[in-house]
Length: 323
Image (cartoon, rainbow, N blue to C red; front, side):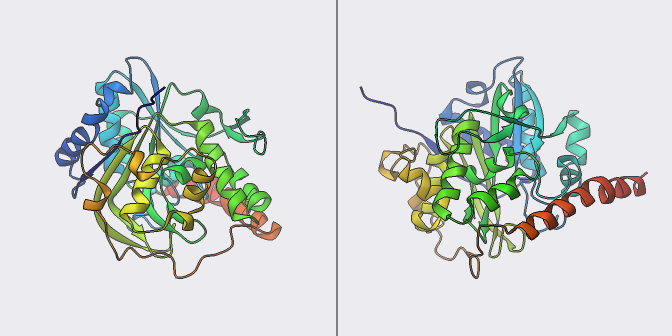
């Protein structure tokens, strides 16, 4: 039986200005059926941006608030009920969002922001059938994944699949680094199985301005002028490594998705707008050097302490100062 090819929509986009961005998103989603193809009236829609950190708000470490605002508006127009969720490395989802300019969109759209809480869910993989995943993500009617294009000092690149690791709640991410990080192949497969379990309905990638070099937070902004969208997150990531001219085997998430047979070949992907060949760049900066994926116990303890300090001491004090 013939199966339909996955489709990845790629367009050029250079502005985060509201009207221009809304028009770009309409063009991006049109060949996929528009937002109405993914969101039905009354459905609860999780928007999952990259809310890594609040410490470098001008360095494009997180998904732009303007993109989240435009997508949330499109969800509302389709009759959906959007809410925002993530599990940042340090601090709360709301604290990181506000530090990165989300306050006005939260207020204007009355957009709830939640921190993820964990529950164990069965996966299709015997090796990772004990994944602790976000209850709020699994129970949402629709998941829209909103990653940022970033270089990454441990995983080469952050794209759609890696962004879904944010659906592993709290400090479980650090424990996974310790448990599976000694083997890059195993860690990549864990990220792929997490993405398969979360199974986002739609991924819209923020590549208008990326973050290159020593990411995920220590690099610098880089204008790319790209928006990408797909219902198949693995196909989207495969297209993006082609655009960035990074061999798939160098990106553990893409390599793992290929080994596990969930990543289509480039020739098997439909590109209804632009083909990756038309968007290719040759000088995207990867990290100066890659760091080990695994976290030793002292690092896990230090990371956990920092997370709770920011969330329960620093963020409340900052909020008090804004009164």
